[in-house]
Image (cartoon, rainbow, N blue to C red; front, side, top):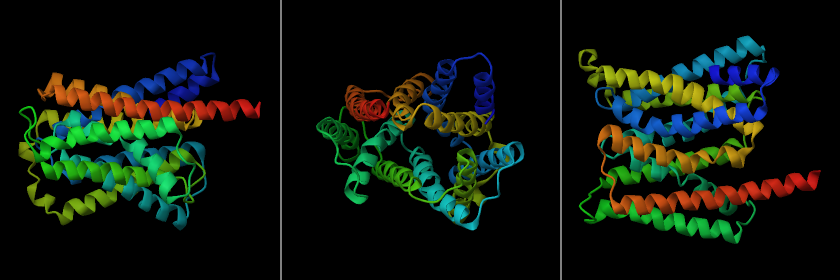
Length: 322
């Protein structure tokens, strides 16, 4: 939220939109890429879903309150809140919640690679389930490359590959997370949400946070909370996720959707894994094998092909409007 306000102030004065855009892209590229490692650090001493739920609820409440007070927008209706619980459930409970559970036994850098396939899944969901536009040859090529990359990532969960052995449950959770986030992103475009985008984002975080907390309670996580064992690193990572991951990172993404377009904003999907894999190796000693590097290269290339194809299509549409 604070970065969005800063960007708006810059835009009102002599700063160029280009400078604002660079700052926002830096936020989603670097900050969002670092959240995978931050999640791993919180899991060292904090309960997974209760922590995730508290994080999103607090961030959402702050964002919601700031927008309601500062912009004096109309109160959301029951229909808006229903949409927020559906979208928030898919994005945050099914998407982020599954990632958090998977990272209990799965390297943070590799987790980011599974989530990087979201743009591929969104293209297929739009086309096969919502009668969207048929993907171009380039997009089909990207999907094929991405699927092969994911197969390479999955193999160590079921057979011995280059000395690695992933947890099969973690792999299934991450695939489920990518599917849930993809469905949530596609569904969010088709439901009636509040006209103020940032208010809707806050509502989704509040709703998703409550759902995560509820499921955490049902899993018995309250009985695992022992404040005396909370480490400084876990608590610091928790507040980092609230301020930087949710408020600054998510708000910057929403700002970019409005000012740079959906296709360009989605380029974070093939930059985040590079940041996540590097930080996991550098700060947490996670193993990065040749198989991992090959799979990462294929997934990132696939996302890049699809994203830039969409950017070119959008540029063509914009030129026709001139």
